[in-house]
Amino acid sequence: MIQDFADWLVYGLFGMSADTAAGVAVNFFFYDTIKILILLFFISVLMGIINAYFPIERLRKYLVTHKMYGLQYFLASLFGAITPFCSCSSIPLFIGFVKGGIPLGVTFAFLITSPLVNEVAVAMFLGSFGLKVTLVYVISGIILGMVGGFVLGRFKLEPYLTDWVKRIQADSSLQSEEWEKDSTSFLKRFPTIVRDAWKIVKGVLVYILIGIGIGAFMHGFVPEGFFEQYMSKDNWYAVPLSVILAVPMYANAAGIVPVIEVFVAKGIPVGTAIAFMMAVVGLSLPEATLLKKVMTWKLIGIFFGTVAFFIILSGYLFNQIL
Image (tube, rainbow, N blue to C red; front, top):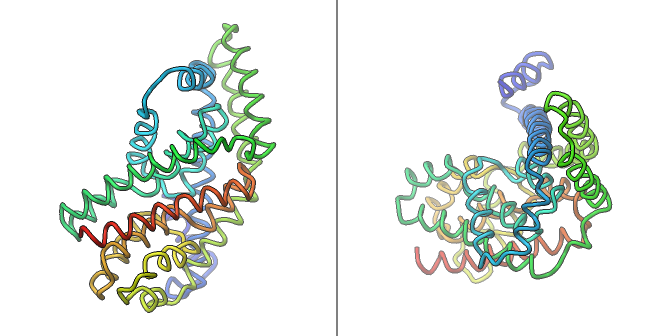
């Protein structure tokens, strides 16, 4: 329905052509803006309900005080793998986790894996590359999330969250404590939950528009074949170069799989192509822009640098085993 509305608005009402870069970019902008705003609002409402009746503060204390021997990172990565979100779409849920005080490393494990692995991409990988490559893709995506989340968690990066996040964390904790003692019915609490969700949407709206605008421009105006010319040679710097070239891009895993199939058909090593895909879906300028509302630039740099490092290592490893 959202895509149909975007098509009607851009190609019908605005009269733009689907065969032009501008038409494709504007259509992408309206589609993703509407989708992410709706997703952000409903996830914020859902997290508000959960926080009211099952305070996330209690879960946070459990994760902090109990020895789980890394299981929390696996569960967060697994949850990320089964949620069908792109990098920008997963950020609303990431904000909900941060708001509830879930340990940052565990939250990062979700944020890393969520865009990398989804069921549509898995099905497309099976059809395009077979079982072996698909298993390597899925398992490596989950492991990358676990290891990345664990490493980032060890850095103790909470001070680099923005003041906005710290305020909503404090407000959320106070509200949870009040509601635990309160027997007010759900119907009376719900308007407050909705108002709080709308405040979150308004708080990140500008960042969403800027981020999606960057993604729309890249989606519509990057020339076909631009990346292949830099990734086609099998040399030592092809993998890190493919990751660097991927960062300005913006697409979900399902949308980039056909591109990867073309890359491999043109002689680009499978590992290099998968590293490019992981960087496209897991690291992007639109994602960085959205995260700016939640993190300082230093934290965004640490996050991107750590994930890029592990993606590059994965690319070299894939080229050896595939």
